[in-house]
Image (cartoon, rainbow, N blue to C red; front, side, top):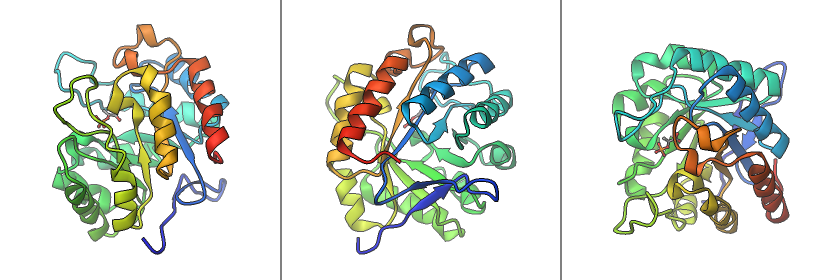
Length: 263
Ligand code: PEP
């Protein structure tokens, strides 16, 4: 696309904000689900120490199984904001229901629309009306065209600060929960000016695949990666097998730095 956009997250009179877009490579990291203040603070510190510039944590958690941990909701938002303030990192969290727009925007610097809600038009309209950046994940069965149409819904309401996130799609392959569609990154960059990042964590569901897929994301020109971290992945309330522990996120970040200038 002739000129690609940069989205700035968490800008205020006190801080410059974090840019996502061409010329930078942005590491977003944090706990898949906020479980407690201690866990969130530890995970945020791990993210910061590794060089992440945005803290991502789940308060409202979408899961295929209703038995899985669904998040602490409002108290997780408070905890996440506290962990963000303690580490100086702007925070990103998922919103699942349009009725929560005021609540979530009160605490978050960027609102995530998850794969399962990519075509939730009421939600797209709601985030389109606010003045906060949106992280729009690709639906697990969505084509690139459908994904870009979802972004247009947001933009049509006036919010142009949209970052796309490729997180893998459903294919016949069963080895991983989703197949990372790495070709979507340059494809989207030819069709749209929006920044695009990659989530190797949810695509692979396996921590041993996170680093190689993050490398692939850099190689195809993604603007950043989103990585789950947890101070003790084996005790995580959800998605432990895909979360990186402290030494692993540091290793990933230094591998990234060898390939791309980390913001
Ligand atoms: C997440 O990012 O926390 C998540 C659940 O991912 P996805 O919406 O891509 O499945």
